[in-house]
Length: 390
Image (cartoon, rainbow, N blue to C red; front, side):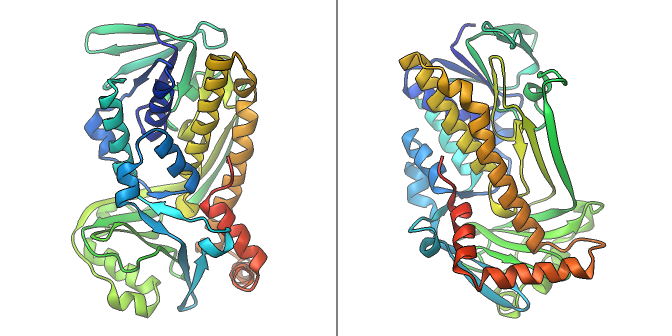
């Protein structure tokens, strides 16, 4: 098989890049290890910054997002028994975010790829990258009893943290930076009316909590739990009781509960791999960086990678200009590290850390007090939350 760009990973990042390139006449193939149903079964965050939303519209995939997604112009931070609102619209100069489930976003991208008869190959096994240090790379994979080789100009590694792409870069070339947090998020999806029209981030001595939503009839809630906890340790009743303890009484009083549709624990970690380019291989999204979900930067950081890659590929194929490709890693990493800083700050300010000093807890109190007393601090939060410029 011959193509111009081989994209490894059929999640939202890989599909979005595939769609954008196809619209510009750049031939590409997407390889995905899992089945389509498996990919669409992943429950992930759904807060989209304005830049991501614009990319979806440019890819001609934004119609349902604009129709069904919820525009949020702010969110709440609950602390010390009260709630303070962050006015994103006011402090970001008129911007906002869209709450739209990642599962639905991925479904829209798949449907767009189907309409354009794009090549997305599922259930591929034993993916291997060849000659990526040079200018004639290829990717081989096994599907059933058949071994297939894809010859291409470029390989895009959008296959997540555990994928083969990053691991194909020689150890002496790659530098990795990681911070693992001593807790995770236990998340529950329920078919209930959300407790609030806007997200509520709650800081509490028992641990962090988040009240989120997917729609007006689908709610997503999280509580901070130790890494040693298992999903089986938490009944639905125990989860709802603990969530009520961590949010203000006015919120707990109107919380509607129901059976969990999905329940899972996500460990929190920060991770960055540098560089994001090696020869003809370009990393994007979770293959190169991971953030805690506190600041809603994960999917949005991947979107900025796709924006840079898309325009770099346009420059190469349309104008014969490789400056975008050559500058991709440095440009992407500059924004990635800003997202890392913001996610670290939100996580540090709002979570309860085991064995923390009284000094640390006083700093958390001061951080929150400063935030709600300073317009400059509020502008900084709003600017980062709605998304820094690409």
